[in-house]
Length: 128
Image 1: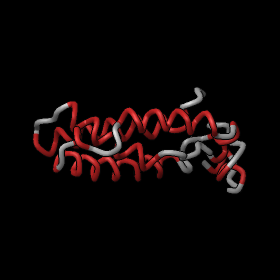
Image 2: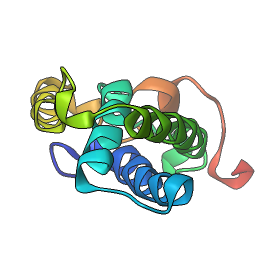
Image 3: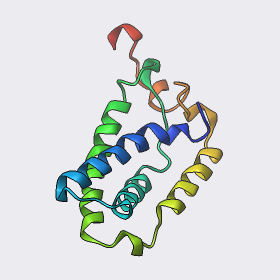
Image 4: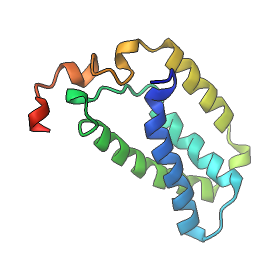
């Protein structure tokens, strides 16, 4: 797992959804809109930990990515209704912050199943 990997799976999912949502709304999208959408979504996901219960992605990752998808659709609507180039928080600033957050985060919260829900939910591998 890379240092920034904790947020990456969620960010990849929502960034792709931003692109798709932008395409579906107007059938026209710009790099500016996609960057605006991604910046909004990643702001909402900063600091999430990766704590797979029983070491699998079923809990809580699927639910988190679903919530991220909803955020991405909303973010695409916001980005399409505004001028993302005038955003107070740029995608570059969000990505820089995501990196800094990952560097500060304790290792046990980075896809190790050694922290968070993984240590507090009594589910065995056979139940997944």
